[in-house]
Length: 186
Ligand SMILES: [Ca+2]
Ligand SMILES: [Ca+2]
Ligand SMILES: [Ca+2]
Image 1: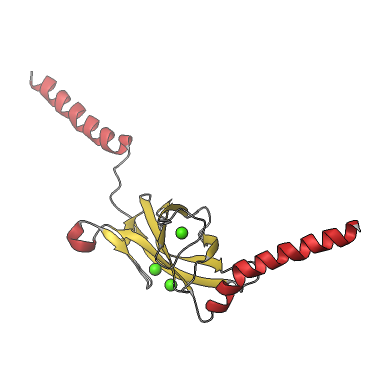
Image 2: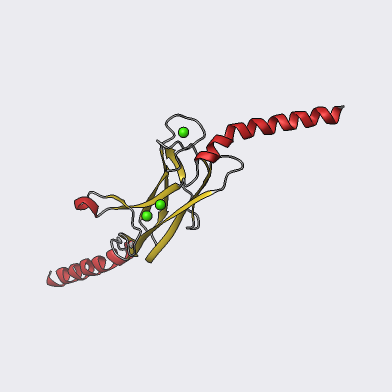
């Protein structure tokens, strides 16, 4: 009797889930998710800076050691709300953090919403390419929708303030010599 009751409860819960998500699954055929990854390019728009999609190498030139800022835009082209299961970056130590876009405050990425994520890093020398990925689904039984987008920058040397001894030593030497000549004249 107890087993029968449990079975009825299980079937009931399953039916509720199926009803909740069946519509979404059916409507999502041909749907998709989109991620775009941007890097802050300080030389765009006459030097004021702007977000650069930078899909193609070499991307913006950034000074080695300076902060790199990335932005990720996730949009829903599926026509139905999506459950975003993962937004990630293949660059070690870079974790996209959600900032804004979930306008109605539920847990789903609605077709009208664009979710914004950001991350920062430190520029390293040479060509740097990394890939952002997103996974989403319409419900527990739906296929996983996946998209990815690349982003480039090139780390260049320069803009480094010389370290203290490299400035101070030559100046001290010149001042010392000047003093020495001054005293000899006297
Ligand atoms: Ca894309
Ligand atoms: Ca991009
Ligand atoms: Ca939402």
